[in-house]
Length: 278
Image: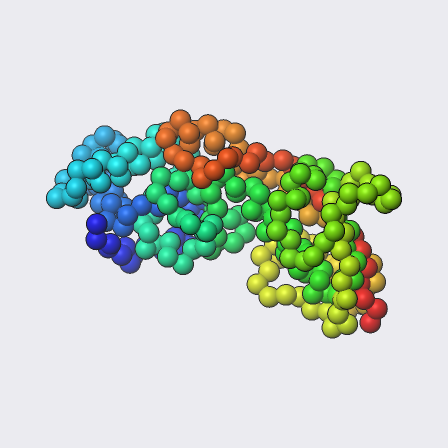
């Protein structure tokens, strides 16, 4: 099927609440669906999904019946989810050309969730919580390394713990705590030692940092006042509407989640340690 760019559409111009959940489909089909919806509203002042489906067929003909049937099934699934209260935006492949997805994505029929702090990133619904927490945690680690940390201790306070931590890709070589010699035995997730730097600075392209006053205070203390020790928390308490209710609505509607759904857990990890002497 030929691709048609929808040049008057920019996903990032749309408020997060209206673009949080998306399904990606062929450009020609998306263009036809939008046109059909406009026609239906203009003539009947409502959205009748059955009538819109008929209009889409007329707009897209001639098209392979098998292909048309498969994309209409996706459209029906989207509308079933919408009727259950999930605000899903249908977008074309060309419209997400510069959006970051997991490797091998996007694929048709999968429900994606936008990163709450980075508008250029979307995750599969199944792995949204793991990747979002991992992104926030890794940013905290990057900040501390750039500020000159020589020792890092990561403790579990509540929520996801040891099993979850082993699946996180951290940006340093760390030892996972397995022994009993530490006073943190029950809560220590891992520890690391680094050479540190005597020229503390903040890394570029920070996403979470502007929303974290504690992180900002530690950075200021280190850069301006030669702070020697630190202790900060990585909190992940909001499920952003990605929960069991969404999972059930999407599956009932016939949309794929992109893997085994990772349930949200209100999580707090504490990172403490020392900075290099300046």
